[in-house]
Amino acid sequence: MQSTRTFSDKIFLFLKGLAMGAANKVPGVSGGVVAFVAGFYEEFIYSLQKINLKSLKLLFNARFKSFFQYINARFLAILILGMVFSYFSVSKLLDYLIQHYELYVWSTFFGMILGSIYYIGKDFKIRTIRTILFIGIGVVAGLSISFLKPATENDHLLFVFFCGIISVSGMTLPGLSGSFILILVGNYVLLLVDSVNALYDTLAEVAKLDFSFTDNPERIRLLQVLGSFTAGSLFGLVTLSHLLNYVLKYYKKITFSIIIGFITGSLGVVWPWKEKVFKINEAGAIAKDSSGDPVLDNYVRYWPDLTSLNTWMAFSFIILGILIVLSLAWYGNLRKTKNI
Image (tube, rainbow, N blue to C red):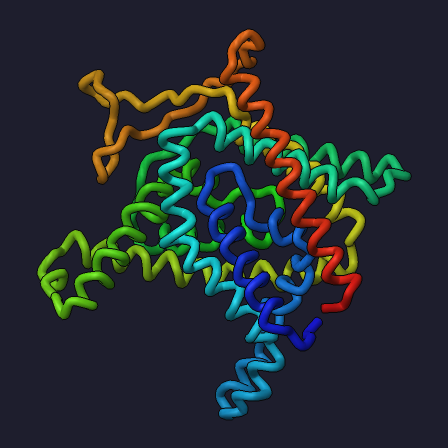
């Protein structure tokens, strides 16, 4: 899987990491789909599953060069750097766009998933009833998750660790949105907004040699939460990659069938035409989270009004999303063909 990468390859890989990071933060969108369509999904899984007892033995024996080569560290480092950078840059932009242009953002992502389904399924041959069955299982699972109701926030560190494990599912399982799962368990704002902002504020203060945050119990708690979440995410990446490497090796056809079905089912999550329904507290008012934002209870989906200009604008963004995915796929295939 390893190869010599030019500077342009590294830049392109960093941009893929940016795209994965941004996708992972948006509810309903899976970073794994980005990896799948961009053509580096199998290398990503292969590299992660190399973090095993053999690699740890190389590390503990101070054979650092062999360790880095064995786990394909350069590939992972550049990709993960792009993801981390995304959380403090592209993700912020996405938050703004969702807040002000929600319909068009969801339309773009809806188009991207449609494009992903086409790209993944175009060479997929449905020859048996079993293949159809597993695609159906994936569709049902995706739709079932789409219509679940969110739970309430829970900052217990063990539960947060578990949230870290399930949140990275979006990177390793195409079609399964880790951020949407976090909404369902009630911890999306806590883990992907509050704790990330707490880290950002802390780093900004430390850069100014201001350590007053140590006297702020709420900030310390959020940093502890982020630490537990990060540990769970790393643990989940490694463990899930081993499982996926096994199933891709021995059950590739079945795995692809379920992935295609799951991505199709996930269209319900990113359906552009929907209204938010917020939770109501005991006083009859809209419930608020720790940041003072309304707590989401569910979505009410509806059919678009074909007489509205906004609807046709949304359709154009769906087409844009399809073109983005197909362009990425085309460019990735072009680079492979040229063996760059």
